[in-house]
Image (cartoon, rainbow, N blue to C red; front, top):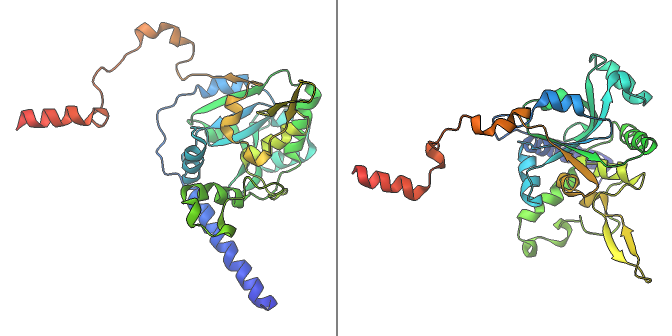
Length: 284
């Protein structure tokens, strides 16, 4: 194949991957009623916290189905612009024109790669804070620096394609099309998805998320770090080393749960089919 043909093929493949990424990144679920008190969450976030997001895109649906979890995205909170210690992240934030007190995230996003985002973009979404317990301040700064130093890194579309392959019968796929998630040594060490970026950031200071534990020759417990490509957003929720912090939409008023206004009539769509059929027969 000539150089021209190779360039044409590469361009065609790039356009195809780009369109596929745009299709996956499209919201397909409507935004529901808020379940998170966003203002309280903003007040209590600390740099180094992991923010989990219940996404509404096609890609989110794939991740939720494969991981059996509602959490499809994870981002690292790095603080307000005025507090940022990483020079590159501070410069990028200032170029963005955001006010100095804007809470900022580092995340790997389809179509943008590793980038800075404002926390406000997730206002109205279902969120959860996962806080690394007893993480030393020096290590917290190192985790944030690791993520900030990878700003501009491309998104790993190959890993999303690997997840999509789980929906296809394994036996009918050509060997070269099968998922490479579990192959030792495979994977792009430059590109990243959201949970891989965060997993590697915490691994850089040897902080555990969900390590594999075995007994050594003398009976002692030995920790083995898991492949960062196998870490998913739900693993931060399940990890015994992260504290789960919730700020429900009703806030502190939940203590007055006896006073909540409950609608005893279930919406028509949520009634059991048999009950609706019985009413239909009675009306005929």
